[in-house]
Amino acid sequence: MKKIFFSIFFMLFFILMPGMGEAFVPQAPHLLLLVVEKIKQPVGIEAFQTKKIFNYQDKQEGYVELKEKLIYVYPNRLRSAIISGTITGFSVESDFKFLKVTDGVIVSQDKPPIDMYTDILLYRDYKSLLNKLSLAGIDTTKVSLQRYNDIICYVIGRSPAKGKPFAGLWIEKDTFLPMKYVVEKNGLMVESLYLNWQRFSKTWYPMQVSIFLDNQLFAMVDMKSLDLKSGFSASLFDIEHIERLYPRNDPGSLHENSKQVDELDKGLENFKKLYE
Image (cartoon, rainbow, N blue to C red; front, side):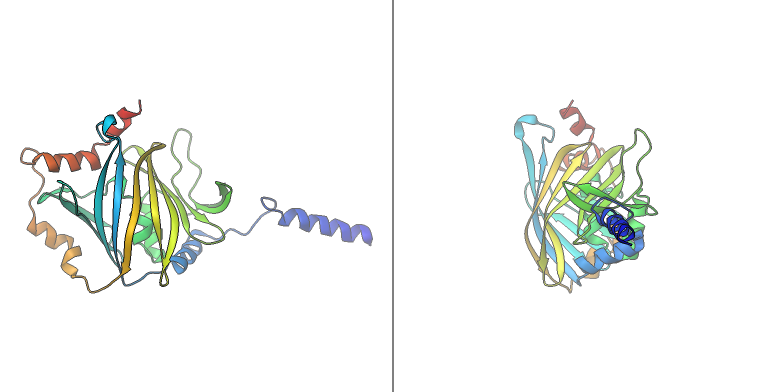
């Protein structure tokens, strides 16, 4: 009898040890529901931040710093505007559609790699977030347990085929806060790390985000202030309305500021050359 008891004891001991046995792993829809229940979906957010882009065009310069204002209106609407420097422009994302205006000209309808980090902060209902991950190329049928910086995480995504990057979302197991988001965009591996999550009323938001392109640090976002607000005009996020207000990109007519922003967002080959 004692032998049976000790056999059962040791079996349970090894099964319950961290990293041993088959731990329960929720499916992606259930896991994302737990994430959005944690970070919550407020009516709206107004945030001010600085974004440092490192080694842009000139190694000697170090970095370019932009001040930005972000307005989130939930569900699923975001307007981001540059509010400093000689560059002027804004972008709008609304229900999976994107539009970027620079110096009064529509320059892109494709979300640039440097702004992919907002996917996790914008889509705060689990169905929309699940859809966004799928659109970003993440296999949402696969969830596993992995360690990241000695922290156990749920990872939504499948191990990549040989020679291809791992697209996935890392979620801290104990807190259900997103930690890392990796997607492939324009031939680049885009990795966003969410740091220093803070609570604002019932809502959570990361105070810092580090953005890597092909494993090289490309940008850092530092949150300066954040308020929960509502009552923003719907026209700020109406992409069809904005398209009627601004002309399309004519490469020959853009002045230098427009070209600089366009290169920053779309011509990221320059970044790769800096590290060769």
